[in-house]
Each structure stands twice: as C-alpha cells, then as structure tokens.
Image: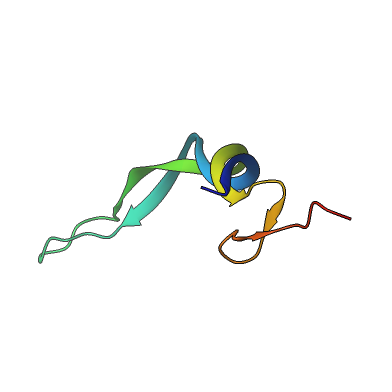
Amino acid sequence: RNWCPYSVTRTVTCQVQNGTVFQRVYQSCRWPQGCSGGSYRTVVRPSYKLAYRTVTALEWRCCPGFQGPHCEEGRNTWS
C-alpha cells in the first residue's frame, strides 16, 4: 500500500548473430586399405558479436514520504 511502481532502464550485453564463418577441415582417409591423400570438408558456423540492448523493468519502491525495509516508516510532516 505504501509501495509505488518505478520504471527502471538497464543496458545489458547479449550475443547476436553476425553472419557465418566457413572453415575448411582436413579429413584423413578412413578406408582400411588406404587411399591417396585425404579430403577437405567445409564446416559452416554462425558468427556472433556482442551487442548492447536497453531493457526496461518495473521495480517497486517506497512511495514518496515513506521509508524503511517495508515502507512502513512515514516521514514526519509536522515541524
């Protein structure tokens, strides 16, 4: 009852995809009799980069005029 909602924005880091990476991987011969040389295969992997996003969240804090761990302590309004 003495709590009020406050909108809070934070900047967080996250990974976003940034294209693909092609990598040639050498593969040796798997035949028991042997074969001439080996072969290459292409591995396609996604590439990622670090990005920053602004996230808005709702936090509950003491309403103006109230304080304390449970927002039960009101400030004195008389002088």
